[in-house]
Image (cartoon, rainbow, N blue to C red; front, top):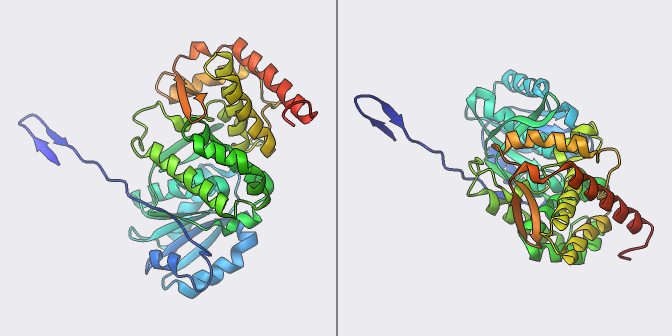
Length: 385
């Protein structure tokens, strides 16, 4: 809508956000035309994680060769946080231009969150925006990175500092990729599931707590696993849907994402995103308990499920109270002047601490000492066995 007076011309317009997250069985089987139907007759630039390419490259190439009627390129890309930068984006854009990708053509990202973030960001800039499809291949990709509309890269030592809000045309989840997902990456995905369970969905928490062993043993490839993933996706989208562009900077989905950026960066990304989120949740849980916002039973259940899954709640290398406290100033800048720290109030409900001054170095130090003690006692078989 364009409005005018004698003094000004005013533009009021907003793009609607419409996309689907769809579970597809055996996406790259030669008798499944789902992806080909979405691509139709468009040129296609496919960025694929090098890890996924090594496992499934021949099968995916065979699928594209059979179905695609227009030019395409299958472009393997190194899949790690140190590669998530402008240089890599420039390489994607250069190769897409070399293919002759037009405004009506499409990019596709196949891989974990790093690949999906980069492809979405490249698509948001190429010819000022072309469509893209997400095909996640990790648990975090299915239930987190593939779900929202944020894209981005790391910049000057800061995680996801540069990016754009740009939704995919569609996200296609084929859970068959879980069969080759390393156990450590599977555990990472638990953190993002538990993030939503702890502050949004108590039923989801109960389901994971009761079934975590079979979820790990069968790599989520059972009806309980499909249900857990579906609930996680729904909870995430439900939280995002009224605030896609983050005009409200008090977001429950930021649970687990206040201390984790420092943990990842300080470890030079040796600690993965999912593991860092788990450590962040442990810190937040301990702070909530020390501030008398969370009861002991809920506190114990939260810490125990992480330890049961095989995730640490304490890390000696990165749990530096003074440095973490200093890093929170960057979070305040990102969140518009407040820390907006999400803490669990009870299972299925979160609460915000807005004032940075409430999170003192002494409070962090006490939380770290307590978490270290709990982790040691658990590993020595002295508690919760």
